[in-house]
Length: 129
Image (tube, rainbow, N blue to C red):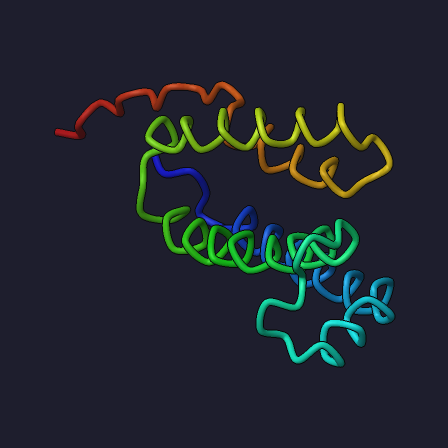
């Protein structure tokens, strides 16, 4: 059984990645301008704020790549084959929620639920004579 005949999980992650990046660009406009003023190359240095802003923005790209890959896999892969992805996202999400409860890590939970929920077995249909 495939995960979904109407894929949504990958698109959900793509939307979260886009919102995450947009949020970072808006909220961290000041530190981003500072990075530009410093010339970008080796601009983070030992500044913890610039490091945090950089990692915040960089996280959007792998999340978008994961969303794109999941979009392609949703119609082609059996649901149990994607369970390890669900467990990995659950671990990442829970760690993020514990460390930063007021964050967007909660937005991973609908995809985690969809990847890990039990699915009914397909009943074999009797062949017609």
